[in-house]
Amino acid sequence: MFTKKWGRAAAVLIACLSSTAWAAAYHLPIEGSRIVGRTQYHVVEHGETLANIAKQYDVGFLSLMAANKGVDPFLPEEGFVLTIPTKFILPDSPYEAL
Image (cartoon, rainbow, N blue to C red; front, side, top):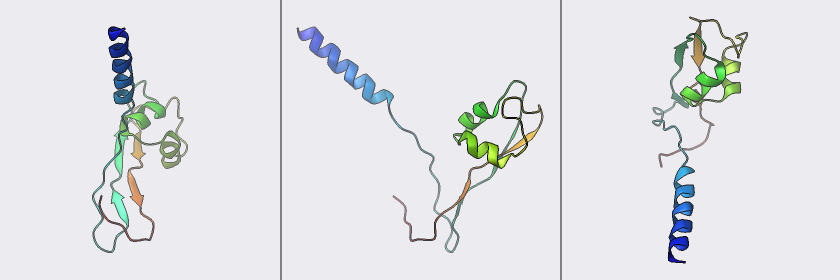
């Protein structure tokens, strides 16, 4: 009975730790600006897809497609330079760092 309790407790602990969320962090923009982040670029290598690249840069697949109109999402041309959408405009409201 003692072992079953610890087994359940360990399973709950593992479940909690495996669902940890990660998020991108950005510096506050300079006074008067609402732009955070920076535009990045990626040179497509053989066998890559937009889904793989989106996951690598932690951006949405649809956002990556929108930033690179006309690129085949399943077979992008090797050597093509993709724009990675990692630059954002904040809403026009007061903000502060957490």
